[in-house]
Length: 136
Image (tube, rainbow, N blue to C red; front, top):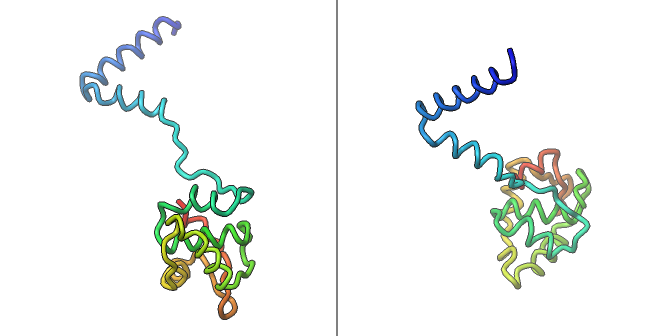
């Protein structure tokens, strides 16, 4: 099969596809080529905490915000304990510009229920193996 034969076959397939499905498939193909938006950018723990929260947590639910703040404080290290008071203190610093809103203990309970965090000692929290599901 020559190169010309192959290109004519491809052209014929594209014409048939346009007849059967209309112009929609052509537009869909073009959109997939141009839109390469990253859905979940890699978390960057090297930036300051306010920038981190603004970039990754502002559009999330309360439990997900809690997990992401905990992740920042532990730099993503699973099993590293953080005292709840430290999380609340940092959370309070973020409520001024309405980055996180008002702290609620429900957030930590729900995050624990979802399996994103764990509490090995009273008043402390650590990231669980599945914590990254919270920012997807």
